Image (cartoon, rainbow, N blue to C red; front, side, top):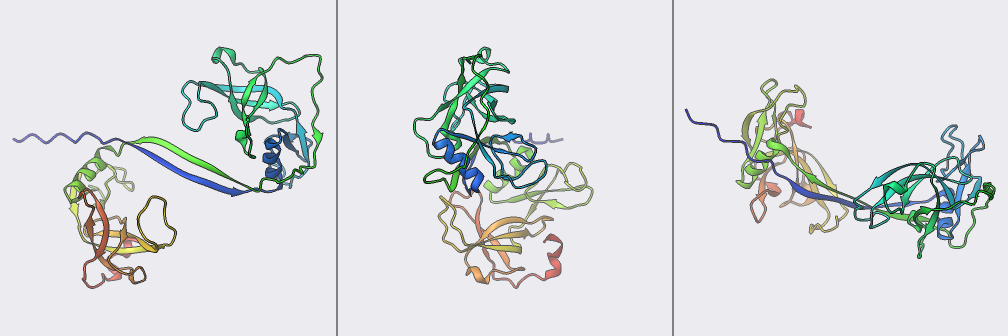
Amino acid sequence: MTAAAPPPEALRAPLVVEFPFTRSLGPVQSAFLTGLRERTVLGVRTEAGGVLVPPVEYDPATAAELRELVEVAPTGTVTTWAWNPEPRRGQPLATPFAWVLVRLDGADTALLHALDAPGPEAVRTGLRVRIRWAAERSGAITDIACFEPYEDDESTPEREPAPHDGRFEDPVAGIVAPARLDYTYSPGRAQTRYLHGLAERRTVGERCPSCAKVYVPPRGACPTCGVATTDRVEVGPRGTVTTFCIVNIKAKNLDIDVPYVYAHIALDGAGLALHGRIAGIPYDEVRMGLRVEPVWSEDGRYPDHYRPTGEPDADYDTYKELL
């Protein structure tokens, strides 16, 4: 009896998702961020008389529009905190620091930011802190460089919020906030086998022993029946376009001229459509039912795109269940 081959070691790879998030600002958020540029912290008063910092444009309790701005103090009290021993790229400080929620004097809610402290033993709930302003400010939350511990003068009365008209010269109208997520992805054993198959120019899915549907890429289990899919099945390489979209916006670092077409492709023998780019045909001639085949990447590890096979279009009834 021949022993079964051991499963391949699961793959792992570092991945980064990064994009700029652009948004316009309403009058309240514009005043808040412009105020930070001018070393002024603004909140907004609710219908019940509370002061929200950061401000919002609608009352979270009543949904009423809020416009009454008030100025609060740059000092406050830590309400809760967590120590960050290993700062990551883009965080406020390059040395270990505490994430803190700070209720600024005059406010009824807390602001999240960094606290510059020598160690966790120097941080506590109730700690008095003040804003350390950035040397260069542009109208963003990063105009607050961080908070720092502050020895309060107990003889000084607590500062009351003062009315503010929210008017500044050259107000901030919009922001661009970079978003970035670094993580390590492991596809698991089922998709590891799938990727190894692609490197051999084979597309291998897994069949559910209960419903007999073949999943490509495989997931290791049937999402419908909830049972393991251990029976491997080679599908394709040809397939049928089920649905598609025309892309008119050029992606950064992607050397593909627009417009181009991305489609769901039901490979022959598969019970689930996968997506791929369609080339070798004008974008406005791509259609449902188009028969296509893979064109492999230069290194032969994956299909770079799919092109028409020249066969007659598939009948709708043969792929309607895969839409």
